Length: 261
Image (cartoon, rainbow, N blue to C red):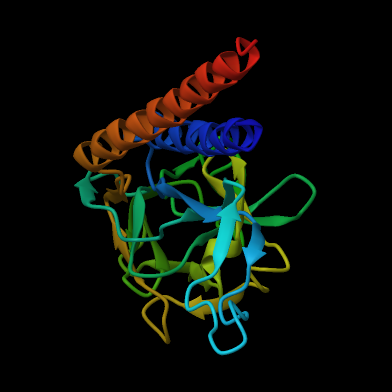
């Protein structure tokens, strides 16, 4: 009975984290560029009471062994980098990556972090920045008198000035890819930072190699499906209830043993 109590407790702890992950997905259903997370659960070690293939007599062996599991635990929370739907804004500074890749964002300490959120704008100096005011890598400054902006699918940034016919090319927005993007670490504010698991960032021209193209005047919506998340939430809740029921049954069995005179 004590084993059943401990096993059920591990199941409840795993489902509690599962519910927490689902709740975070639901909370970010309208977060631009958010990528849903999935809780992955694995079984714990087993106590082997009888090995399969061990001798049952001089001439026979046990065809089936006896192993008792000790429960479950969360082995990881995986990010799913599937493409979110396109949301048309017609804002010339809103950008979306169609395909794989991330925008680079320069932090105050010059560290580059990465995002799928292309909700950009210009600050008082004309610099292209994200919502928190951090510069878009490698830094783009629109000159005074800019009347319109065109950003091509390959990331080329062109500014049309009021006193010029031909546009001024300010540079090219790169798209960063990773060998293992699920290894990226979320730091909040729709930003990711590299880890040893993700590998170093690979700087690409948009549309080349595995990098996606850039769409101007659009944003990428979250890839969270409310229907799927609600279904997963119900399953996690029922699994939690079943584990708590096991704890109740084990407690009743212990009470029965204690009442034996």
